[in-house]
Each structure stands twice: as structure tokens, then as C-alpha cells.
Image 1 (cartoon, rainbow, N blue to C red):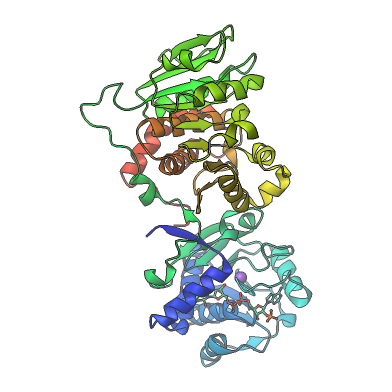
Image 2 (cartoon, rainbow, N blue to C red; image 1 turned 90 degrees about the vertical axis):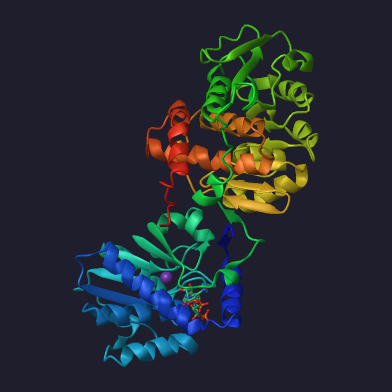
Length: 480
Ligand SMILES: NC(=O)C1=CN([C@@H]2O[C@H](COP(=O)(O)OP(=O)(O)OC[C@H]3O[C@@H](n4cnc5c(N)ncnc54)[C@H](OP(=O)(O)O)[C@@H]3O)[C@@H](O)[C@H]2O)[C@@H](O)CC1
Ligand SMILES: [K+]
């Protein structure tokens, strides 16, 4: 079963399924609280005094359980919470108080002496922005400079104000706030704990898939021992215009580094391209399909640095009837609209997606999952909506990438990605598989280069070693 990205509602459904399967919710709370206590011990090994701020719901209940275990392990604990818990949370509070640990009102919060704070005010049950004493507690915790371990989510996200955590223990599954900004920035390091939730309870194929090392490894095309350059995928890159000479060359580099056997680069005659020595050059007087056929390609990437010639280049390339990646200047509504139902991957950034959806780029960036789905519906193609994180859509399927970082927001990075996806299409992968693996692999290569100052060609160069790491099981997802 693939990993899914949960919403609060979907997690509540999973919770109910677990209960229906015979797994009592109090057991989940016990596991959750204990996971939080363990995270405190592991991430802050020198701390001996832990203060817990808890709310009225089950998030607070997890906090009481954590406090109980920390107390039993010899920590000094102080617990602050309002009255009025019910159900499991009330049980968890009683179990804590049974050990003689007093629960004081939130208004009495005194952080003097605390070494770590556990934030258990609110989790997935948040229904409005924090206000009143909750907002005050969040502000005081943030201002204290103390390390904060958040239970499930930093309280208050995605709204402001919210707690800023150093470690967030995600319970049972990752939620949108753990992946998408600005909430993600408040999470600090994220550790996922399964809390013993039965797998069957977490099955939710309707939710977005999270790209994991295991799932992506399984998609890597095999390279048979008797491979030759014509058998592992021939890629045609079509782009380039005036001063945009690097973009198509980077796509060609990406394609080769992702395993293409032969890459041909078609570009307007007279454009001073300097591609790799290994690239076959195809300078053209005009964008015409007959001329492009000479490449005998199995997939095409078109639009990179094509400037005003983008639509024409795309039309000619699409006439070949090959699996295609459309990027940059090829991403105009008239061109993409002609691709419905064909094996075409589009790779817009929010600005290009805005053009295709006739919406504002800010709107796209704020709701990337919805935007990707809307693009897939409207155009009937496979969508790679680039961003932090990149999200993908095809038909009813959604996926969210889990590799890469803001360091990859530099010129030419998308060109390399187009080349990678084209190479995977040429190797015979379906568009959905080529897009998911391409995005994941490209991000993984970026992660291995560094966190700042990344150049697109360096990321391309890191693709082979990222592949080796993926194959040899040396890749850990960010939540482990
Ligand atoms: N499988 C799982 O998922 C498991 C989940 N578990 C845990 O349960 C958590 C979800 O618990 P939950 O549903 O009880 O909601 P929760 O986050 O405690 O918030 C609700 C409370 O907060 C209150 N409240 C809301 N907004 C507020 C605000 N702005 N300011 C102040 N208060 C506000 C709201 O009050 P009300 O809105 O009714 O006034 C209510 O009292 C989840 O994050 C995880 O930690 C584990 O125990 C085990 C398995
Ligand atoms: K919390």
C-alpha cells in the first residue's frame, strides 16, 4: 500500500476504522503519547525538565500520556491545561494525576526551570485561529527560546498565531501541514510515528500519494546487461532561442544522466548552443515535424528556452505522436488543449499554471493540490506542478513529492527535470510513473548536492549517484 497524505477528516475516518477493527482509541492515544515522550528523550538527551501545555481534546490527551511517561522515566514535569476533557483525554489526565502529578491551569504557565516544552494544545481538531489564553501560551512558548516538541502538529497551524516547533511528532500519518508551507516551516524536524495504527485503517486510495523511496525504487527502469544506445531510450529535446541557449542543453544533460541512450537536440539554426559533446545536434531553419523525425526518438521534451517559438516547436514535436514533456514556452493553452488523452506530461511552475488555468499565480501557489487536479481535469494530461513541494496529478490521482528543497529554486532546474522525465518516457514508463519517478529522483539528486547554492547542471550530475543510493536502500525519507 502506498503512503497517503492525510487531512484531519481523513485521519478521523482512519481512527474510526481502527476502532471498528477492534483497536481501541485509548490504545492509540497511549502509543501517541509514548512516542512523544520518546521523541523528547531522543532529540533532547540532556534535558531533565519537561513542561507540557495541553488542550481539551485528544491532542491534549496525548500530552498527558507523554507527561506520564516522562514522569515515570524520572523527568521533572509540569503540566498546564484547562479543565473540561472528556473521553480518552479525561482518562489520560486521570492516569497522569494518579501518579500525583498536578495539572495546573494554562493561565498559571511559568516556564522558569523548563528545558523542553511539549506542545499539546491543539492538533488536527483545530477549528479556528488560536485566541485568548491559547494564543498567549503559544506566544510565550515561542518567546521562551526553549526547544519545543509538538504533538502531531504545532498548535495553531495553518493559521497565525501558531507554536513554532523544533520537532513535530506526526501521529499515524503525515498531514498537509507537514508538507506545505507556511505550516511546514513551523514543524521543524518531522518524525512520523505509526502509533500501532493497523495498515488497513490507513488505506485511503482517494488521498494524495506521498512519494516514498520504496515506491519510487520499484519504478526505476532496468538496464539489461546487453543494452545498447538504441535500446534504452532515444530522446529528442526541442527548444532554444536567441539568448536561451542553456535551457535545452540542460534538458539534454538531464536526459542522459537519467539513462537515455541517445539524445538529439533540435534548435533554431544560428542559436549558439553549447550542448554536451555527446548530444546530436539538429539545427533547423523552421520547426517542422519531418525534420524532427530524423532523431528517431521515443520521447520528446519541448519548450525549454524556446521563447516565442515555443508553441510552434511544440506543435511540430507533438505531430510525431510520441510521449512528450511540455515545458516552459510550450505551455500555452492552445497547445496543451490539443494533448487530451495523449501520453503528455506538462511541467508548469505556478506562473505557467496560472496562464493555463486563467487564475492568479498566488492562488495556485496557495492551493497546489487543487490547482494540479484542475489542470489534469481541464487538459487531460499528466501534470507536474513545480513548487515546494512539487505536486502531481493525472485523472483522479494526486501525488506529492517528498524530496528536494528550496535550494532547487534556481535557473535551469526545471529544464533538467524535463529531460529526466523524457528519458523515463523513452525508457518505456507510463507518463504517471515517469513523472513521479522523475520528480522524486531529481529532488533526491538535489538533496545530495546541498541546501544552498545548487546549480542545475550539478543536480543533473548527481542523478546517477542518487539512483545508486535509491537502489541500495540508502535513502531515508525526511520523516524518519
Ligand atoms: N489516529 C489519530 O488521528 C489519533 C489522533 N490522536 C490525537 O488526537 C488529535 C485530534 O484530537 P481531537 O480531534 O480531539 O482534536 P484536538 O486537536 O485535540 O483539538 C480539539 C480541541 O481543541 C479545541 N480547539 C479547536 N480549535 C481551537 C482553538 N483555535 N483554540 C483553542 N481550542 C481549540 C476544541 O475545542 P472546541 O472547538 O470544541 O471549543 C477541542 O477541545 C490529533 O491531533 C492527535 O494528537 C491520538 O490521540 C491518537 C490517534
Ligand atoms: K499540538
